[in-house]
Amino acid sequence: MTEKDKPLDHSLQHDDDHMHEECGVFGIFGAPESAALTALGLHSLQHRGQESCGIVSWDGAQFHAHRALGHVGENFGDESAKIVSQLKGHAAIGHNRYATTGATNLRNVQPLFADFEFGGMALCHNGNLTNAIDLRDSLVRQGCLFQSTSDTETIIHLVARSPQQTVLDRVIDAMQKIVGAYSLVCLTRDAMIGIRDPHGVRPLVLGKVGDAHILTSETCALDIIGAEFVRDIEPGEVVMVTSEGIQSMKPFAAKPSRFCIFEYIYFARPDSVMEGKSVYNARKEIGAVLAKESNIEADVVVPVPDSGVPAAIGYAAAAGLPFDLGIIRNHYVGRTFIEPTDHVRHLGVKLKHNANTAQLKGKRVILVDDSIVRGTTSTKIVEMVRQAGAKEVHMRIASPPTTHSCFYGVDTPEREKLLAARMSVEEMAELIGVDSLAFISHDGLYQAVGEAARNNEHPQYCDACLTGDYPIALIDQNEGSNVRQLSLLAEAS
Image 1 (cartoon, one colour):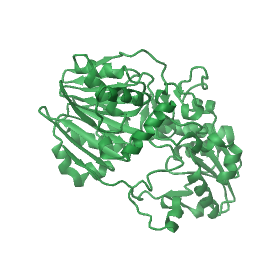
Image 2: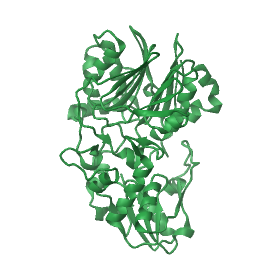
Image 3: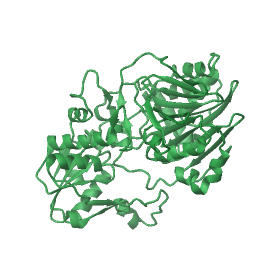
Image 4: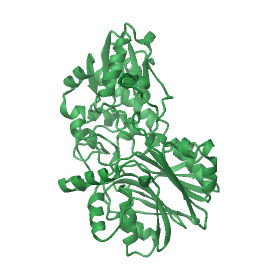
């Protein structure tokens, strides 16, 4: 196994006004160049995690692995072709990580790998296990030794201790003890296994290219390798891919479907299709509904790039206003860009965005963005637009206010740091410096994704970050577990 460790610069990685992507998973079984195809799939899923990446392959005799901090292109790109060539085999799984539990260091990079009595198994997952700390404490008391601070390792220990006979039954037995939101992909000597949590909060799709089957987070990862989309893995479904085909089962108690609605708002790539809906079209429709709910007289609609673009297109069309790129994004700001002085550091947002003065000067501008989290970036962008000569600045947000933290695999600040949790819309508008501020309503958001309205008794999606309605028990969020979790994170950093 080869592993590369290097320092990671967080200076530009964290955008205060966006919730950060969770993780991306990709697995393929039955393809001669499985690792190369996995690297391409992970490249398409780079938006879901930029802190680390890894691939484990199986060649029929042994497993091969490479894990590293940084982007996919840095570790599995053209300059790293030798690494990919060493990952031999007809099956491979890969993972992009954005740390939601555990610190950012090499021992937390997935896929995790372990040798069991039945042989080796690699495992990666997208999401969070909400009883991982509780389970971990119990396992440690029973003598288990943990090598990482990632909640994913809890699954490995549960598989190891399972009394079941087959690999599949061991994995299912382990997951029946897990509470949380997850999409899981495992690779053994004989099979690739995919599991989606009973509520279906996190995405997982099945694809096919030639005779090979694929499990991955989004359809855009199928497109890059010319694979066809077969179907979404259903909530609570377990699929096992072997040389003989696909086996499907539902071993968990049925739960109401609660797919994460923020996939449509921000997380997924716009060219993906999720749960049968085009993400791009959903975002345009969100913008259209937003315009119907809170339009105001203006001269131009301007997106905060890149995530605000589809909603701004929909807003402009519904409002009958011109759409213009009044803010230009610099796509070449590297992850390790060094900000050498306080003066440069305080320029902040201009490292990524710059005002297109010719399209803003003297105009009443509607700025469209996907969300506001802390408010810091929004404040800087509004200031930049005003300095470019905008006569008025109105901000429209393509999601309801973010009032609660996510515990299901999305990196969000503590609730007291969320702007909407401690301020009214009017107070937020004053702080950010806009002439007006409006968010899409909860019902409006649900209408934009094809529902008549939000069913407040039985919500159709997970929208806990917007409502505080958590569909999955937050077992690790009691006081004792929080202390334990903080201790683990401190040890890892």
